[in-house]
Length: 290
Figure 1 (spheres, rainbow, N blue to C red):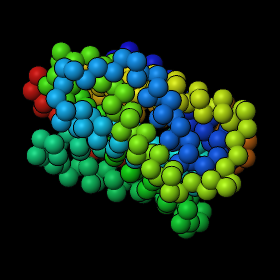
Figure 2 (cartoon, rainbow, N blue to C red; figure 1 turned 135 degrees about the horizontal axis):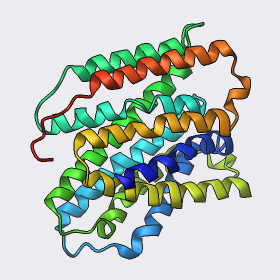
Figure 3 (tube, one colour; figure 1 turned 90 degrees about the vertical axis):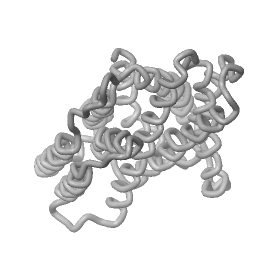
Figure 4 (cartoon, one colour; figure 1 turned 60 degrees about the horizontal axis):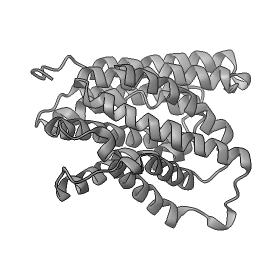
């Protein structure tokens, strides 16, 4: 549990940092560089002698979804939403963790569908004074795709690791980040406007911090913690970062300065509805001895 708790604190700071320091930098480029940094950090420990080639490819695929696709959607969402809303809209990830686990076990609970609909109502209430604009909903659904991608990857890795207990996490972690880096870099290659790309020194510092610390160490310890946790605990810890991230974004990075009392009330109501979605969507799964 300590791994998941420490990473939650690191990631809470990252939401506001991205919104404040990297809001003008191409999101696809940042996603690719972050995952390249994470790969370089753990590449010296890579050892695939103890696993089959198909397992190497499988882990690369997990990383392409959990890290690559997730980051592409997550980073792009900051172009449509302030960082505190990005944090709030990630709150359904625990529901997706339970949903992915259930589907991998060939079962499904309608609670997940009810939770998703309730979360949409919560998102709409945040923009209650007007009809939510297209960009708002683009940001919201990007975050849901990011959450679903992240949920799939961590559950899939957890299941794989429990079948390969002799393999140390550090020996295969760079396979996950290689998959993520390839996935994000492919998006960047075709969608980044390279002629307009300009990054100053402070932005590079932020990118490198996010790459080596938030992505590299953060993802490693998160997946390690995930492999040691049951699905219920893993789902719950996916939500710990949300209130911390909202507080950091609003107060540490001063997003609250331009927020009226009415906006804060709507934000609270909307966040409450989305949190209710998590309560509805989560259940105490009977997962045997997991």
